Amino acid sequence: MGIGILLYHPLLAWSLSIILSVINNDNLRQWNGKKKTMPKKQNELQPLPPAPLVLLDRDGVINEDVGSPGIISVSQLRLTPNAGRAIGRLKRYGCSVVMVTNQSSVGKGLLNLNELNTIQQRVQELLWEQDEDATFDRIYQCTSDDPNHPRRKPNPGMVQEALQDFGRHIGASSSSSTSTIASCDHRRRTYMVGDTSTDLQAAAASGGVDYRILVSTGYGRTLMTRKGYPLDIQYHHDDPNGRVEYPVMDPVWIHEVVGIFPNIHPSTVPFLYCQNLEQAIEYILEQEKEQTSTRSSAGVVVP
Ligand SMILES: [Mg+2]
Image (tube, rainbow, N blue to C red; front, side, top):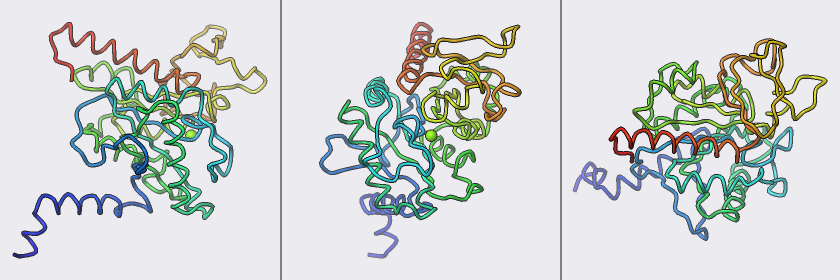
């Protein structure tokens, strides 16, 4: 039996694909957070059904941000309010949920890969403690500290990997989410939730994310706060007086940042500003239910 026959044996090919998926990365390209004692299976390398896709940044979105140099110990981990329950709701609705995170502490020598994996595992455990459905379909992490690395946000490489893995188109402009959304109702939507401008920049540059959502946890509130004003008040450019006060509980669409929020890149607009991940996921589910209702009433079979 030749080696070629062996390589084409389905079981062997499947095993090799798993090995290659782990090796082919910048230190650890995709990590699925699997732990033998945990009850939930990951969908690693299984056929992926069409489903809404939600990409989540980690620090400042899923867990509280601790400032520079970031989480380097499990003892620093605290989830944002109801993060596990919210992710569980997404999963039960049928969404694919992935983590897309820069973890440059590894590249800087502050963590090694085993320590990072331990932290990632603890994040997953904390989520499961709230909701056993709160599982990531995949985890994408860039461990490089090189700002020019194509996978490191705000560069789009890591986001594009996720989009391709989950069957999304990339390359079409998403400079305007609202116009993109209007033309994409025939397919399942893609969402990115982050707490920094770089998260939204990566989503915009990827050419395949329909909704960009900024949360006020982590760095979000700092980005959306003008010097001298209370932290829990946001401002909207459409107001004739130059500002409108919004209760922090209400999500608000931001259509312009130039001259208003100087630390947010112009490519990120429009984006939705939410209080936290729980509120962002509530919005996502509302959108999905609305789309499902519309498609069902039009006679479209919704997967
Ligand atoms: Mg973050």
